[in-house]
Image: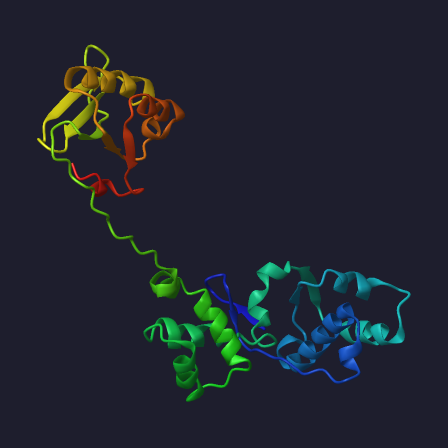
Length: 279
């Protein structure tokens, strides 16, 4: 029961609930809704008798049921009982009536207990958390519920060793004993576009002498890579080994054909590990 105060808002005055009997529990849903209204009015009779009041319910069939003429004797008796009161039935959807379910639907504390003893206590394993909870609470099927809770814990998933990916050991690349036998290649950019339309720098580094040759390029495609590698080969000789990352210009079929044509062994770095390219 609610009362409208000076601030034009309704404030609770009293709460009431009642357990149904075995016979009442078998009634149809709209009959149970009507019975709840009857019991409530009887309980609050001293406050409601003689004054107009509103019955707010989420049962849309309540009003139409009481207005019917051809109804069973039980409904007739309830309608006759309500005749002595001045009331108005107002329908309100169930999603706006959640506050009245507090007495009939007890809030489950299971999730909050599991969160407190696992998430807030240090993310311990199932056995330890089960012992901690068992000292204070009893939860049916605790072990299974706790297993499901821990398996969906983001922190536990992130730090679980079984879910970690460990970096492999870097393997040494054998160094050459003569100049221009092994080269390392890569791109730098994109940079500010020049008047010639170049935005990248194609870098070739000799592994033995650390000699570096730079070429300004417009793109990083295979066609330009092959063009400047050929220019490098004509100027300094063809290397036996070429080391690069896994950019598309170095993994394309066109580039593979180029290295095979010049008899170059192509070594690719580990994925997402630029430090593997020693130069």
